[in-house]
Length: 217
Image 1 (tube, helix red, strand yellow):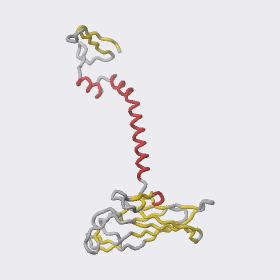
Image 2 (cartoon, helix red, strand yellow):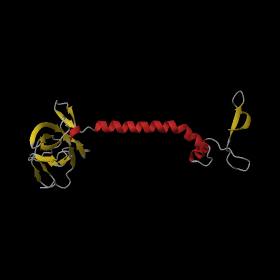
Image 3 (cartoon, one colour):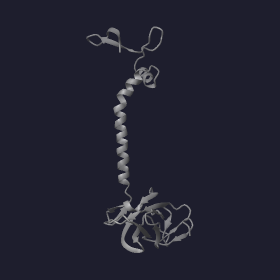
Image 4 (tube, helix red, strand yellow):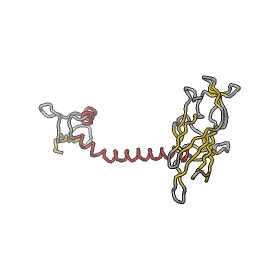
């Protein structure tokens, strides 16, 4: 039976793998087993918590599509909502037809996870003392944050030059906004003043204007 319509899934990737001695490619065989069975309420379809096996050829990356446990819509046989079960992945490494190693990981997913690399999941311990593996999204977020910070720093470093360049453009949005915010200086023919600035000198008590001069920039 195909996965019922409306059920959210996650694509799990694994491999490739090789030997430490020579780097020779090995085949991977992964069995995924959910911690429970459940029923998709919308259709009444029972989904049994049995193992499903996926393989990757030697030197190739394997792909498996699993049902995401973190979603509404599943119930048990009594009609109670069920959610956030775990999935156990048993990984077997095969070289020349021989089982040379195996490993097991118990992982969970969040509702936003649409892809996960089984090789890079990291173990975490819940408040109940249960240890499960989760996708290593933290490293991805750190890299993204570092890139954003670098871009912001570069933009800040370029700000003085950009502002200076805009001030030399009488019709630029920056100059227009600045003039509208404070005061507009015009030549005798009504054109904007460029290449100069107006110096206003106040009286000693700062209650009046003592002098107004025009200086070249």
